[in-house]
Image (cartoon, rainbow, N blue to C red; front, side, top):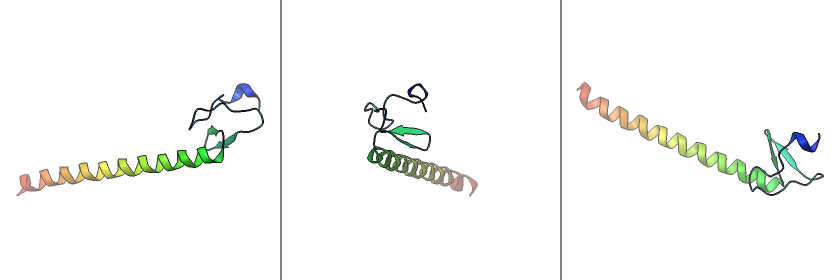
Length: 70
């Protein structure tokens, strides 16, 4: 793989990627495994917060519908 086919910086921290060392996972390039793990944790937290917000919105919508139906 040539240098022109990949980004020049790490997806997580923005550090410059060297020609010999880079870590490719899930369609992204990272400078080290630690950056990949950090990005995975960040994605997990974001999805959990989105699920919690969706559950809260669904609960609020059900609460509004229940008194109206009675």
